Length: 241
Image: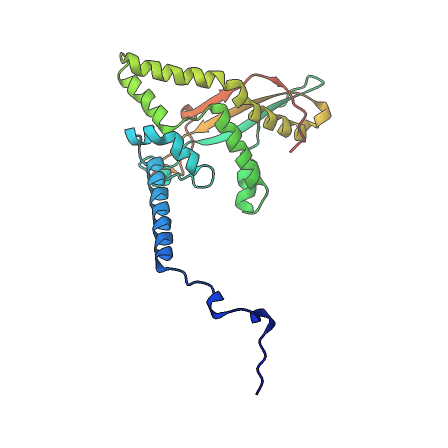
């Protein structure tokens, strides 16, 4: 009986077979994966714990690792769940000088999203939230903690210098932070009046504190609404929404 060597094995010797993977290789890989998971969970824990010296010392490195894909927020389960609710309103002025009343552009998005969870308004809401966050200069919890400490101890000179430095930094970046909101207002007003008939825009942000669950059906108390009204700005050439 004649046997034929398959072409793939022709000219190969028994000692040409691939070497077996050493068990230590698998062990090393398992240790590396376990160490990576431990570091990941430590970074996550530091980011969500209440302000403390450890989080203050490692905020930059932890945020650099977690953002933008692994950022965590456990505020839903905190004693003060969630955060304030933001509503964006715009006022539009046409080239003829006529001015519109304040137009709520946030509530219709919520209503569209409730009716259809796949509605494009979901993406627009993210744009609103990002622009509002930039404009208000929402800062980290540790900075808010420092401000609260300064309010309780106004004679603390060192602490006051730190808080004032943060305030100066925020003031210096105010113009850059206003740009996304102004562009968004221009896009909304362009859709209302038409881009060629639009002259200037003015945005307003209403901030509502979320009530406790037991009072979720109560009417909103106007005295608890914080309003941030911004000056008129020349409209930018943005495709209308």
